[in-house]
Length: 291
Ligand SMILES: Cc1cc2nc3c(=O)[nH]c(=O)nc-3n(C[C@H](O)[C@H](O)[C@H](O)COP(=O)(O)OP(=O)(O)OC[C@H]3O[C@@H](n4cnc5c(N)ncnc54)[C@H](O)[C@@H]3O)c2cc1C
Image (tube, rainbow, N blue to C red; front, side, top):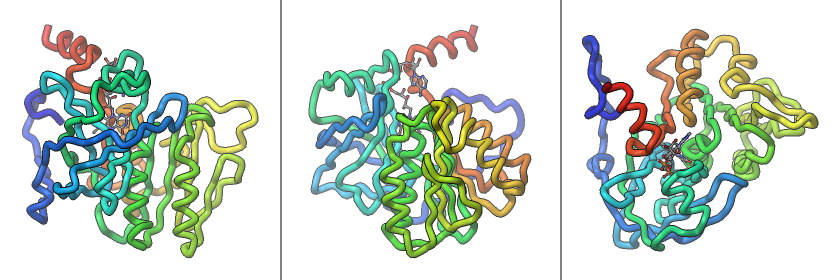
């Protein structure tokens, strides 16, 4: 939350994020070179940023960076790569109509091959444990979940988990091949991929479940809202740790509907992909609130 924007209406309990190593406290501002720009789908661009060799950039799976624009304004994007690959950061940038940064990336008018970034940021990070995990992503919300998955698979960490990924239509499933490849690498752990053409399977140790909200008639996979697909599959959520990232409406639905089904509020970790505070829509809504 933006503490400069928020006003408490009653007493509040503040839960702090435990910083366990000095490196975790280091938020850096660094130049980053655009190494590659790769279309991942019709409206998502993969942006690969190379960091200076001399600078360590330790981050935790799930965190994000801010890309600095003129005048100190910033745009937040989650890191999709794993912490072990911190030299080259992978971001998934969705094109938003009129979006200052994303449009410039799609129209190849980014002014310089050098960007200034600040990070790592955010408390949406993987937490070690033994509880089964539910990873719920909407659209580019799959990015921080990919970082978590890459971290787990890359380090041979075994946990029972299911990844539910909600998008509009089949063409938006831009990361499915990567997810399937990760599932394959974790193959020793009885992995099932509930891909678009496959039937969903009951309780394997890693499931990947794409959910389409606007599927074409031939779609044989899951339909509807992504959080509803989870609720259809699992009646009692009390034993799960939930990681949810993506559109604010999806995150809000996960928080309210999952707790109603037994998930402990303190075990629902989330990152809500809000607009940048200086974007025109935000300025209009905050002007309306103030007047
Ligand atoms: C912690 C965090 C992590 C994020 N991670 C990602 C990520 O990995 N990938 C990603 O694509 N986005 C992510 N976002 C969202 C992204 O930061 C915003 O969408 C950002 O505003 C886009 O910048 P822009 O310059 O392209 O558009 P802006 O110039 O900021 O926006 C222009 C207009 O587009 C509309 N708009 C902007 N963003 C959205 C949106 N998300 N939904 C609907 N309308 C919008 C608004 O009307 C806005 O006025 C994240 C946000 C947060 C807070």
